[in-house]
Image 1 (cartoon, helix red, strand yellow):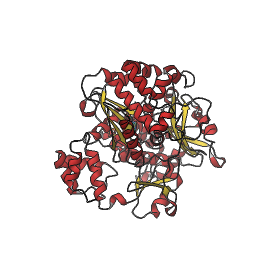
Image 2 (cartoon, helix red, strand yellow):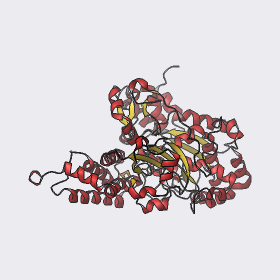
Image 3 (tube, rainbow, N blue to C red):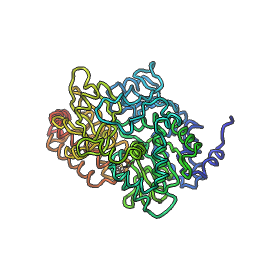
Image 4 (cartoon, protein in one colour):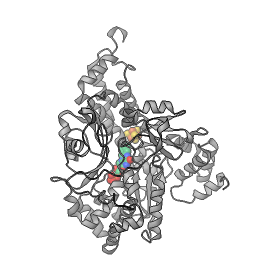
Length: 556
Ligand SMILES: Cc1cc2nc3c(=O)[nH]c(=O)nc-3n(C[C@H](O)[C@H](O)[C@H](O)COP(=O)(O)O)c2cc1C
Ligand code: SF4
């Protein structure tokens, strides 16, 4: 096949919905990088201001701007991969650059090269990345989104139908939008992407909103370090997501849908595309135009309004709210943005009922949550737990405890965004009220475990460095605060000042409080939970760190 020209590429995408990202990928794939000439051609073709487009392209991590850049290996430097030997692996791969957590914390270190994902811990032993099924269910309760995921051929249309697939969509078509909205609202299903907003209320708001076309956006950006559940759902149960989105469209009157998939999951693209094509061919998506859009590498694009800007081809800053996406979302029209796990829960709830779903939680809690568990545990993986399960039960009984006879020193919550829980608080139950009482939250459900040999100041430094790198820079306190906190956590780089610990602590608290009070999105609000929890649980480690970095009075 001959090499497509600039005009071929632009003509193929210009009239499509949300064309910028696919067009950037088309040039990136063709040339191995995004050249100045490509940016100029795209700006002309899509009538975008050149300076804006230049700023947008350079914002994304994975769009290389140097010839051959797409071929260079990118090695995951997330918290768990750092414990597994990121530094050595990266040093052994010529031209390697770090990439933030690539969503594979339950296996060896991932390396992204072109559109392949390899895994391994040494240069000569890299193999194609597997996508592990969730471990056999070890609990006493009942699963919702994972209940059928281990069935043979579940990812195919036939296999999905054989195990109850698309019955919920049929029921929704027969009984109508009102039935769907009532059932989802009554079930207590809340967003599984981080913020926990009630799904029924979100859908009702879009159903009630004026303006068409309405849009369903699936947030498959999964950029939170320590989270890898959405990938498992999409790889092994793609029709569950397609069915959930089709039901959301029916309930709200939406006629188009996007799955915004993170760049780091290239193997998931053909799986999802096949599911969409097969569902379309079977007449299951009448009146609902469902498309995949691949992200380009930016954690903040998981924030729903940043994601919408990214889809629209704008600079992916989060938007100021209100107005909210339910009334002013994609192209300013009513839009549902839901996480993969949230959407995958919809069909089982419609089939088995709101009361069934409610009853899956422990005590007064409704439903289940998939936890991506990794780090210092014997059996890392995705576990669907009843909401309210004790953390210690998950770690010790479900995941086999900590290897090497060690004990748990700390566990992160919400990936990194919830900071740490440690000491007596390790007895906490996995539900939002209990975790919020400890100054944390469950969020998207990533939990990374650190044993008693780990340096928690260094873990905190890596976490804050991630937030600093990923801050979009729109708000001054977040942009500068994440940098200043990273410096204060860095061994030997910046002194704690002549007053030592009290001054260090005051400054760290002050920066964190300012960020929490003034940041426009969850990144800047959550990042200080790392330093808050470090100070709360590990004052001894902080004291040693500050003593090692403090300048003596006469040198200050
Ligand atoms: C910095 C940041 C990153 C986020 N990343 C994701 C993500 O990768 N996936 C996701 O579903 N939600 C993410 N969220 C939450 C979304 O903004 C939004 O609440 C969610 O997609 C709504 O879907 P849900 O109600 O089904 O959870 C992120 C939020 C913030 C502040
Ligand atoms: S809080 Fe940080 S990441 Fe969020 S909008 Fe402000 S600068 Fe960007």
